[in-house]
Image: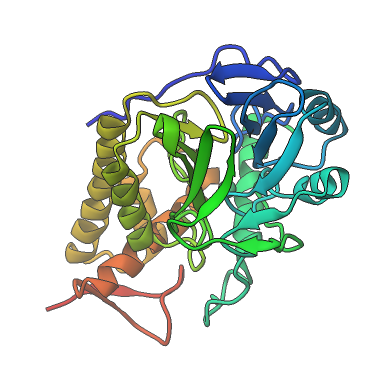
Length: 328
Ligand SMILES: [Zn+2]
């Protein structure tokens, strides 16, 4: 099943574009292999002076984006600053916006720091993210604009799944906890329009990075189902255009991951024990510079297969240098 990707033709940098009733979007000029055209900050609520609005994913530290948001929010009252997750293209500007508006920051929680295990060859997640960004930057000749972690961010208000995260005249936003890309990832559900702000959980232009241990493939599958069950009228990712036919799009995302998982299991059952060999087998035609990143994704699948009782690993913890074998 091919994923029916959607493109965004004109990012209209710095402009507050009315993309739907009650929804405006301002795109930051931080294009990269992780961010597509850049970070799309959403403003929910009426645009008239005096209106109450919520801001979703203020974005990276960027002077031009600060100026654009200041202009877009002039005369309105920001009642909540909602953050989907703590990657550096989503959350860092929340501190400034809080300072400027006095509005509380709202999220599931800060980025998780420890998952009880660290790989021998990969000191921490930041290293994995940076490595991927670096190889991508090198491969494409682009400036290194990476998806690193924002450990500074701690929300004033922590939301649980289903909580009202913000509300105003004629609109209500609920938190939908969607772990997978990160363990604290949360989507935001604008009830009146059945619109879901999906952060990096579901993007229209690309699949998302699942890098263990904070990224979790089993959680990701469950979170895709959680979103599908909402039956959204539209998905609004932080990067790129909205997905207006959500259910078949999610089905294609699920199938893509199931196909990869089946490929990993087949490789293990064929006697391939090491992740680098699986990557060479499964990522034919992909630039070798991306193999390390691909290895993280294969690891995410293997951890799920271990949990499913289909694969075992040698040693004390699953990692990129750990041998894997089929369960007999
Ligand atoms: Zn992210």
